[in-house]
Length: 628
Image 1 (cartoon, rainbow, N blue to C red):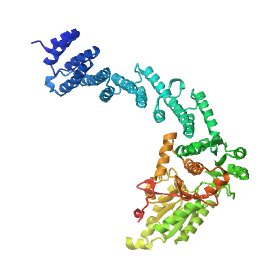
Image 2: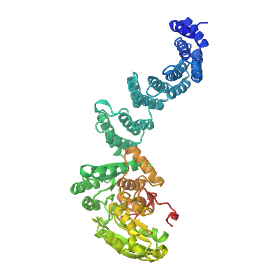
Image 3: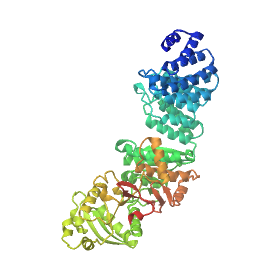
Image 4: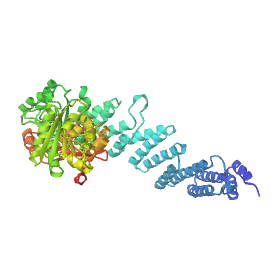
């Protein structure tokens, strides 16, 4: 009986039917030999090349069965060669790929896709056969008219197969689909995909083209507002794109369309100069509100760059006010620019809502000027009410020896007392100091050796040292608070609840020893980690649209824009009616808290309450059992 090696040499030297017969004889004589798998694959490929696709399918399935048998055979029954497992795996991968080709010959596209999925799962992403399967999958999807899936598959191929000879054809196919056949959702998906930069500084393909095409389709479909937002995103991401002329043409059509709309909402922020990035974050908040408000495409967004200059701001407000279709403005941001703008706006009855100037910074009494900033009064009142109603009837105050510190002290004492609590003591500290021992001692703090000198048992000393207050309100910012907290512990002021304002909510609060702030509570106007659905949606959509983290200013401008848009899309058509409508805004749930607009034009807000728990800053849960 011929030896397997002899049979293999004979089979390898013959072609056609004689070669197939010799290969079958070799397979029968040595089924556990890895070369048997290769011999069977040769037969299957010959059948496929001869147009006998159905018979080829059967042989391809046998290739995988034979490969499994070879892989499972005891070591003594198989010639162990270097790379045997890799070679077998490649034959399995190839069998799936050839199976897909056979199904295509038979007109069975869906079966071909299943075979290609198996081929991709079996292949290493770095192997040439992976690129072959990925490209064929995209082509099959396009042939089946599953165009959105095909576009994504072409893009996956381009990312995975950097040196594949089919790249240019795949790129051309993807570009054709983008220009002619894809849905907006798929275009956006392509624009979001991580894509390597193109050579020569060209915008990354296909992100730039896909996003611009999405804007064009939105406009053609009657969604002008969405088209504007998408075009603005395109401009921010691809400012140097060669497609700028095409974008300009779309922008011109959008401007003509906007001229026919119901109303205009202006944004007046510093978008250039030193505050450009700050102003840009505010603009993004407004743009997101437009994207998420139903019917917002009937309102024209007019963007003006104040440059942070008071005189320019007054001129721009005058121009806006002269157009009766401009019903409101979001801005200005700074106190000095607002002071210049308000008299101009008042003469025309143009409502201006600032996202940056508080009543304390700009105490203007005028019916056209609104402030969307959390007031210190509302913030301190909420903290005092929380404390008295839940865990403390007595309190002390530690505050910076500044005008603002004294104001916070007085506001808290008044609010705390009004809810039935008693402020026992107040103590100032130098905000420039690092040592706060004098102020802490004045609040009753004592070192360990001083407590030991009291004598008696630990429980007796504890009773003698019992502080007369349950709560310590610390007015200050994070740098001071992070230094004060460990010093409070050093002086044995430990068993009191620490309470603070949003000045605490800054990076670095927990760097000085988070264990000393465990359980402390403080307020915030906006907390990105909130579990409230409206905040989660805002943060999620902001990150998705702008690829950056939302700021407090972005959250404020988003809330302002949502309130205005909700009113404008209902049909409010003049400034006087808008003023009246703003006065009806009560308990609006925004991302910067629940707020009502008072007769003083102030957004009276309920701050978000935060606390330090297990070394992290988290939103305060509705229940307070953990405090007791």
